[in-house]
Amino acid sequence: MSMLQVSVYRYNPETDSAPYMQEFQVDTQGRDLMVLNVLEIIKQQDSSMAYRRSCREGVCGSDGMNMNGTNGLACVTALSDVVKNDKLVLRPLPGLPVIRDLVVDMGIFYKQYERIQPYLQNDENPPAIERLQSPEERDKLDGLYECILCACCSTSCPSFWWNPDKFVGPAGLLQAYRFLADSRDTATRERLSELEDPFSVFRCRGIMNCVAVCPKGLNPTRAIGKIRELLLANAT
Amino acid sequence: MVTNITNLGRSGLSDWLIQRVSAVVLALYAVFMVGYLLFHPDLDYATWHGLFSQTWMRIFSLLAFVSLAAHAWIGLWTVVTDYIKPTGIRFIVQIAIIIAIFIFLVWGVQVLWGA
Image (cartoon, rainbow over all chains, first blue to last red; front, side, top):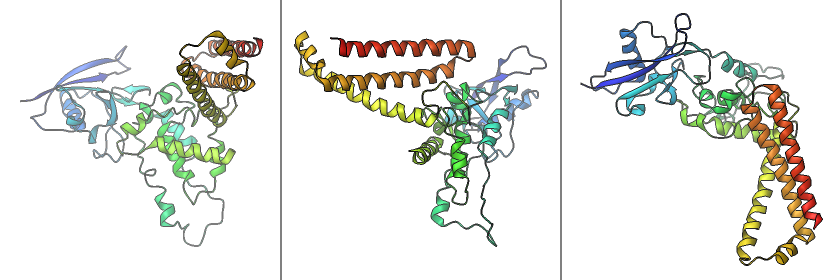
């Protein structure tokens, strides 16, 4: 019998004056469960427990949370990845306002995503069928388009914690580069001019927390470096 | 685009570039200084004075001081905008920093060409 000691951040603004940690005992029966499975067992013990989830296979990006100090998706994080000494601490993603328990308000995260205009812009006349790309041009989008906007990276970034209203954050910047690198997008100049201020891109200090936590194995720091190169090439 | 008027070069790109170029200058100056001190274990005042009375050394030193001033302002401006959120206090701290940097720079020029 293996009991897992789980400590979960609880806060219901309608009834609690302050957040607190609640302890749960979860019987894993020796299995290497995913953290989301543990939360489901906890939900059976206490149905007031609130968290987001949907696909439970790391595609939808709903259940981003902080597990034993590291951000990740609960559904694809095995207990063996994060648990030491049978103790698991679950907290909401850091730096965003808590709506309830593990549910955070992602408004400002989406606002930064919206700011980089995450859609293809092309002012040329559309061809008869479709805008073609060579395989090489298409290859440039690999490692960029796969982002699921779970916010694990941006909420692990101190620069985003201190300036979430000004610094776009790793998730937004990865998508900014995804459209800068797209051969079909013609708004490169306008996009770059929106990014050259001291905060939007340059508040990144390259500590690579984003790379360390990304559940999809993406590299926002490299994308930010590429944006800097484009800015530099455009301006020197 | 986030508007700012207190950072050094007005654009994040120029601040970033200045920060890196000044870092290279400071690295060269530091390596030179450490090397000089290692090669002169029995350094006396006359040798030290002789080094700094040469024009190239004064120019190299001035370049390092100007780089240090720019580097310090960009770095501390970033720290201040990260950690001090009330605008009034942040502005006062920024003024204090820029005055200190100005005094050190003028003092440095005085030392270089004064003796």
